[in-house]
Structure formats: C-alpha cells, structure tokens
Amino acid sequence: MYSPAVDGFSFRGSAVRYTESPPPEGILEVVHCFWELRTLAELPDDFHYHALPDACVNLLFNLLDTDVAGVTALHTEATTLNLGRSFHYAGVQFYPGAWQGDRAEIVNRYVGTPYSGILPLVETSRRLKGLEFTDMAPVLFDLVQWCIAHGHAKANPVTARILSNLDAIRSVSDMAKLVQISTRQLQRTLQKLTGFAPHDLMKVLRIQQSFRKHYLDLYADQAHFTHAFRKATGYTPVEYRKRFRV
Image (cartoon, rainbow, N blue to C red; front, side):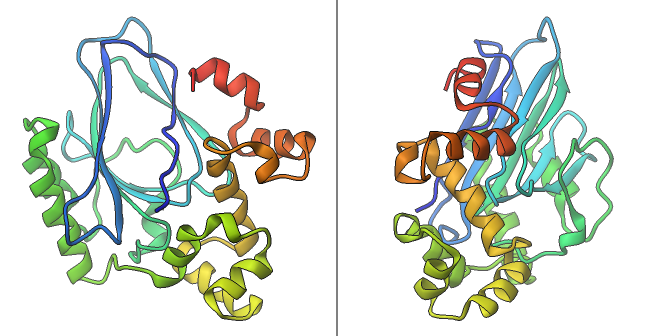
C-alpha cells in the first residue's frame, strides 16, 4: 500500500542508524512500520532531522529519557528538528486516517517534555529501553493492540481505499468517486479522520509519490512540481536530493 519516503538526515555514516520493520500480522491495516533512529557514538556536530509531511501519525519514544514521549504528525509542510549529538528514538508510524486518538495531543515540533496524557507511552518507553530494535516488535505490538482496544486506532476503509488507488486520483472529485461519497461528504469525513481537507491531503500524497514516480505523472509541468515541492519541503527537488542524497 502507501509507503512514505524516508525523511532527510543532515548526517549519514556509521555513527547514525535508521531502521524500519513491517508490523506483524494483526495490525497491518493500521500500522505502516515500526522504526528506530539512534546514534551509535556521539556525533561531532548536532544532527538535524528534516521531517517530511506524509499524513501519518507517529507514537514517539525517547529511549534516553523514557519520560519523554509523544504523538507527532506534520500537516502540509516539512520541519527541521535538532536532535543534538546523541539520541535514541523508536516509534510506531500509523497509516493516514488510522489514528483516532485525541488530535489535540498531536504535536508538529520537537518533543522534549515528559508525556502526561492517557496513553501508556511512558510505560511502553520503559519496556523498550535497553532492547535491540529486533526485540522491540512485541512491545510495540502490545501498545498498538491497546490503542485499538481503547478506540485510539482502527482500520480506516476510506483512507485505505485512497492510499491503495493513488494512481487513479487526479482531483478531489476523483477521490470522492473512488470512495463513493460526495465531495462535501469527503471534506467532512477526511477532516474528521485525518485532520486534512481533501485538497491538502492530495498535496501531501503527491509530494510523497514524487519520490518514486516521474513528476510529469503527477503534475502539469516542471514549474508546478518545483513550486509544490519547495512549498512542502523547503527545497527545490534538485536541492533536496543533493542535500539529503536521496
């Protein structure tokens, strides 16, 4: 189904490791991946993480300070986070529309304060601390199952159908026809399920597709693509690929 592009890293080398793994059976319809981002040695300079908008929601755990955790997501524009010279994060990335928790908890910036909400994030973070990434899946699976059981996450047939048929969507009208509702109903439905208006969701999904498809398959011309890409990422396509070596 939908597979977001990996975010941009200011530093690449043996001292920084980013890893993703697919979720186990039972949560495949709600979770795109489990992930880990960590340093293996202290870096000579601060690490800047350029997060791209992808319409996903992440549960994030700081495994160097297990009280620090949060629910994160971006809207339509990228942001750069300074993670310092030493860090260890892990998380769960939910498909667009699958997260049904309190949207007021979602932050779009650096998470650096203790979590105080109702989700068992701190408890999960403490269970994860000291584990190798290959051993984290059962703990993260338990958390996702808890979220599903308590109504914070669930499979979303509307967004799942959109994400599975991106090549057939060229307009909001196409999106509405695909899920067999009116454009007005689509507006209300997507706003409630994802926090996005249909047009904004299309912008994000097209930028994500542009990392894997030729821009002329998605945009009217190069100028339109460059404008949309720069607005979403902060860079032209050439600048982005050069800076982050994608």
